Length: 588
Image (cartoon, rainbow, N blue to C red):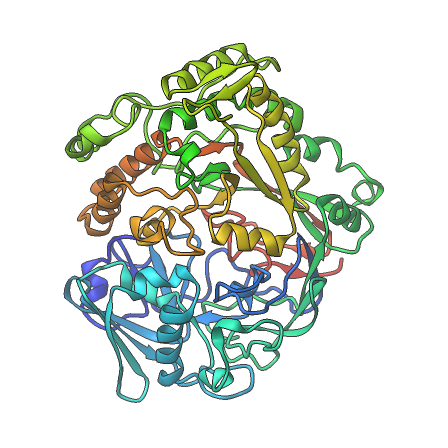
């Protein structure tokens, strides 16, 4: 998110829009993609590969089911996934923003309650913001560092002032989870694991769990906000059960057997060939494809520039050249999956091919001397002939390694110090697809005289090592939205390079990136905003930090026929807030 409209800042409002006014009127009946007549009841059982040892998703310690952050907690405002730049009141009944984004003030709804029946108070809000900002996960740090004060205003008001005017911070603050302060009194928030079941203000509460095996969330029949227009037609399934499996094969077998009721398929070839089992043929399982208009984000294998092996962009480009995408895609997907071409590709925010022009060129020119090749001229990932040998790619990679000071001696890629060039690829257990990709990649690297070490560890160890940046290369998944803003500092900001557990896995620190995020946050028109994102996309992509794989312009969801979703789809498609939020269970 980036720019708050002047109209929304003039007085207390039911919502905030970046450009113009919220699409929905003050008296809207429900979100456009929710079914207000959806029946309550039933259950949905999802599968996850991995394990967990914590129920607190707001701290660095432990491994937590990622869904808890969104299912078990509520925020002052909620996103409409049909509008990239809009929030509507949730725990807060109104929001007011100071001139230029100097401060934001929320008024709590008097009826807002936690799951134990106690009211959500101003004290809870202030405690939540201060605790998350000072003791919570690093994702909360960047925004909190820009807060100069937080204070109560009257009985139900909270005003947050910023050290510098920032129009987007009003929206970021509106999305912070609100916790009950009393639950944590006398307890160490940073070390909580399975000993504390969250007291929720959200529609669901944790009903049961078994460490590393499952978490069951039940719809709270006394949920305070069930009649809010924002919630009407959402969160109507009685039970959400999260089942965990040691690997993808076990999870797939559980779905075929009916132990889980929905599964997302990310492999295009498997979708075409594996979903013809008896329960599909009988109609008991439905195959749904949900289109979307959101950016691809970046999914692939990230190179840690904190490691000396990957400091040189030519080495990183060599690793990209050696990655035979066309052959791997054919092997894994039957050649059906399109490749990610940049961080914001598949959307209006993606960089345009070829040399930079117009406003994009103007924004790049001050950094021209420090930009890597491709930022100004245009950068594209290599395309092979699809043959396993990938001779052109290997030849290009060999030349780049030689430029970077390496040579092959006795069949081994060797540095000027006489030491073999090698690196460690760290993977999490259970990801059979990633392992298969890396197996092919390792074979390709052997043609360069490079033999990397592949280390596969359990999810807890993996989290510990990646939080400490103790890897050379690892799996990377970074979803981005149609409204990127301050969170981009968390992904690739200089301040995050040395913060343990940050999301800047590649360790990038680039003045052009910092400047473009600033431009996005201060842009005065949508055209200027998009130009700044286009530049950010160019600098990141030409930085050669990630070896990208594929994306899908649709989500492929197999589910039991009793599970339904509305015909009206948000522009984000199958994203946060879609399943299970607007799904319902209904027997025919």
